[in-house]
Structures are given as structure tokens and as C-alpha cells.
Length: 140
Image: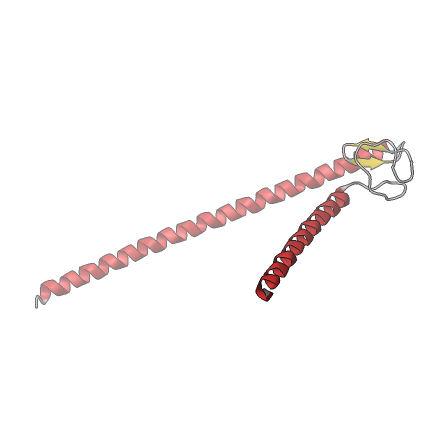
């Protein structure tokens, strides 16, 4: 009976642990989603993209894509969007360069491996020929 009680307690503990893990995962997901939301330029509260007024302070907002600003600051938003676009392009070019470098390194490694395989084959052939010659010279 004590063994069954212990087994039931263990199952209950495992179930609670699983629920806690699920809640922690959901909380982390929600926090990440909230962190990704833009901040109101007036009060700093997290807001959803596209709303004309902040839900925290009721201030007017303007949008350019996912960038938020104050009314009258459209040029500032355009400049920020252009800066972000330049950063993304620079990152894309850096990623391409890194990929090309990795590809070149891989090609060089493949060439070295092919050379090593050829050398190994030549060495084996030489050893085979030497062994054959030794057998032919000394047949017993």
C-alpha cells in the first residue's frame, strides 16, 4: 500500500512539474512577444503595430511600417527606416561574405583531402610493388 501511495505521489508530482514547465514556456513566449512590440514614443508602454493612439497614455501616433513616431515626425521615421534598411543590407552582405569564405575553406579542405588520398594510394602502390619485388626475389 505504501508503495502504491508513493507511486501515486510521484505521478502527481510529475504532472505538476509538467504543468509548471508548460506555464513557464508559455510565459517566456508571451514575454518575448511583448518585448518584440514597439514602445510608445510618448510613455514607453508596449503597443501593437498600427494603432493611432497609445493604449497606455492615449497619445497620437504615426507609423511607417513597424516604426512608430510622433505626429509631424514622418521624415524622422523615413530616415530611421532608411538606416535600418542599410543595416540589413550590410548584414546581408556580411553574411554572404562569411558564407563565401566558408565555402572557399571547404573547397580547400576537399582539395587537401583529395591530395592526401592520392598520396596514400601512391604509398600503398609503392608498398605493394616493393612487396611483390621481395616475393619475386626471395620466393621461399
